Length: 97
Length: 388
Image 1: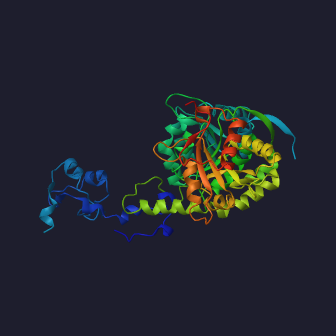
Image 2: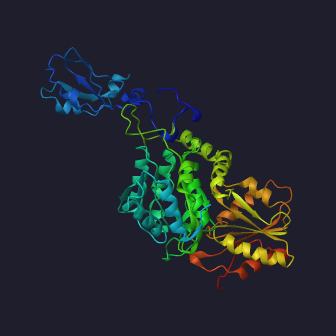
């Protein structure tokens, strides 16, 4: 989380005047389930990329890359849409020991 | 100086709106506000103003549309009364919290229940902590001039806060008086061009309006509102002076009427101040040292000016046109607070009057003055013209 500012240093009325502030909020901390992606089975159809509500699935050179866990909230839409079932949701606690 | 014309208070405010020529007006009819917007709608229909008039299905929608238009960069207005204001309650906080400089003339009317269409101040007193500025007019002339002043004050970059210029429902809104409507050109120069610092339609500079703020930022945003409203006493005199060049009436937060050497002073707002002036004149002729401290701005509350205005008085009566159930009446509470730091505190008496349009006559005021001069202060809330 970005350092919090005092009342003299923020825009009036709670207006967000410089987008995108969403980058400052690492919402990955909210995640209860983590999508575990099997790169071998993935066919790069990009359905998960298009549907991810947090734009947390990066693409490079036409290939899907590992989920950005700074922003993935673990909603599981990627798992639900995957036509080859290469994503499974596992409890986040297993990864945070 | 233009010649005076017979106009109602509502008609005078509609004239102010014509001269302001706002970009957007969204409104819903409610007695006794209706003739303000009705009168203005005629100017729209006749092409006299360039305003986009939005007819909505409720006051909640009216104020919502006005807030939205403010963030499209529009100079924007609406008007309401009583139940309409109550229905706007949620959006009152949205408007002030987002810092939209909306001007919303109010014709004060009692809140239900029981249903009543006549004047008291329960509507605007009920939303006194919603972050809006509130100014009150004694008569139609003041209602007109206060509306002009309100626009400039709300839009000042240090303030950017919505404002309610209030007048007494029916008494002022429907009563016909001689009103001087100042020259269109002079008023338009005074009102000037307007540029809101934020514009949702400016795609080159995208912004987000109305985003969530939780434990981390809401306190800071509210602190900014406290700061801006506290700047009103610094900003107001210059705007009032500019307007006075046109009107020859300089707006001040209080009007002191024979208070200098007064033993007994009445503090009151709106049309009742006119009645009180008549009584002060009569009693002064009889050699009685009485005076009126007319409160013209209620939010922000002019604590220091009130304290200064009451120096030397032996007894003060505060007349509220609204009760505060389970607490002292609103103006009385604030006037009493104003006196806390004064070294010579006058005796102070609270009166509630005029609820639901109950008449306030000269002899009622005279009785209040006589009681004050006789040192009769009961220390509890008293009621004027109420049947026991």
